[in-house]
Length: 271
Length: 259
Image (cartoon, rainbow over all chains, first blue to last red):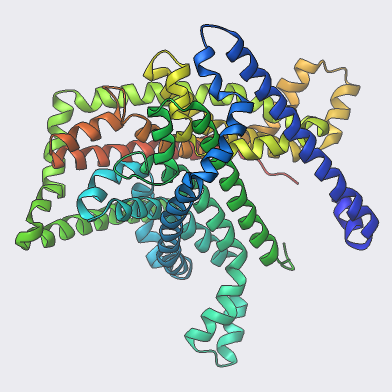
């Protein structure tokens, strides 16, 4: 894209582009919030739906101070964050090595493929009853569900990243006397970092889908539980505030991944 | 011709071998657990009981009913997601203003975990079926929308110019130029959407309905019928695999080399 090429060498054009995208962000959000406010207004004005006025924009925004002061927002975010983090860490710790093996060994890849494809397509929440039986705590079973969902994108993205690595590099490294550990640290990891972070971004998206329903049963903390609680107490403004919070947190986590991907993106000569 | 046959039989045999290895691991892990008295109840999780239960559930029609109910909700949700997502995706691809202004709200809404909408969906829609279809649709619409927009970005702008020169109406522009060019990307988006929808469908069926794959799992769990539970896991995996393979076949069919 010629715009990016000019921006790299022209700081004024880059600043203008940044300002333009900031304005777009604000205006886009403003239109969205206005439409939401309008919808809430009509819901409140109609006597048949007036009891659901809590879904509107203003009640939702007014719910945030109450949620923050009571500590509910922070507690839910922390509880969900712990489960998500543990599940993701597990998925990466398992998925990365398996992905490397899949990428390096045709034998393993060919034999494991059909099994992986089958287990991958078992909807993650289907494992809930088994997870609950196997793990002593609900937290453990939620972490398991997040991990079993998130491991597949990590495995396949890592394998794909390895497929892009130029085999000549391995030969050169072997000629220069690299041992397997150095092969891993100096050749494989830097080369596949971009694809691994792309896989982590996808895994995070999947984990985010799985986390909330996993927290609807059996636990008394977390974002999913707080939504269920708000519904049961008919606190629709709290409910919508939590839904918005979930979107904001998800957006933030995804942006972090995108930033990491850009950081580790590098041009290959033949790309 | 001979090497093509050899290639096919190699991939067929590795396919079968892979599943056999999976089956072996499944059998071994439940057999090992059944040896210790503290974990012996897991014996009913094994492949033997599961396949017996599968056969029984096929005979009394439970599996067919569950597959039918879930397929109906999945299909309806995906159709809505396509009907909404493709036009909006085309709009995003064609109009820079719309793309720039819609980006921030769409990125925010996309990252709302789909099942978070469940309490709202249950209130808004009269029946649980409709609520589940809504949840599937709201999850599936985003991959379709963005894949469609990405497909349009790849379309060579000169094709639009040529079509306009040759007197194409807007409708012909859509059916003759846009749709064939983006078919590959849209189908890729549908495959991703199916993956997300598949994740959302099962938990959505845990509550409020008395049919479908998710309900059948919950039912098996509550009546402690673990062989039925494992049978449903196999059915869900097989069905998901079949749907995903169908998408892959469609994608290959519409794949064409761009210069």
